[in-house]
Image (cartoon, rainbow over all chains, first blue to last red; front, side):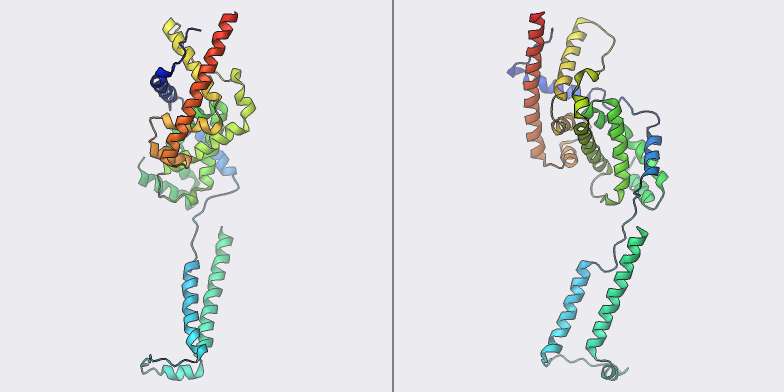
Length: 129
Length: 189
């Protein structure tokens, strides 16, 4: 064996040699000529295909904000507190509407419609994927 | 290929145009295969690992966030696929006689000395653990910056440097041991 052993003061040389070794022939040996074809064949036979993940219309954060507002609306109603805030309703007679449909059921109905729509949307998403 | 063009091909693939992935394979196959080959040091297994890299990339393409470069994301898959391939094939790869280190035709004395050193270094690298081999390979590649190596290996830059230093030290000791063994063999003969 003609190779000189590495001594401690040859560490820099060793590092240089290591660098040369790692870069030697790098990207010079290509994969087989039918590499792309083989990859595409594997992809065609693959059970999982990538798809764009559609985000739901209302995310978790959105629902939390929405729920928070619903709770805030319910608190004064349930506590029977009198509000100093009065709104001047326009001439389309909303007061007449509220007398027929009270605010609480309407709020709950709106929330229920949103939840129903979101559930339907998520179910459809799962089917598409 | 520009990053924008790469993103266009990715969007095409995600829209259902599987054939658009061919352009990405053609663009990166050489680099992916070379990384796998350097880490695995076995042509057939490296080719298999490179193919698996592209298959995995295709299947998880929707998870690519486009915050980093596509190449870095792809090399990360290649790195971990190659390391797993070594772990799976460890008995086969540890048989050093099966691994042919490419030599040239020239037979001059200098060439032989040089070649022997290279072969010894190659043997020493093969004795490293899979992840150590991966780190040291990527660390010394001119094509990759230290930031890219950190992203690929999912380590911090300082961690990469520390690990590379440890691997180099270990490699140095393996090499010393190999040289001593070779020397003993010659003396015995």
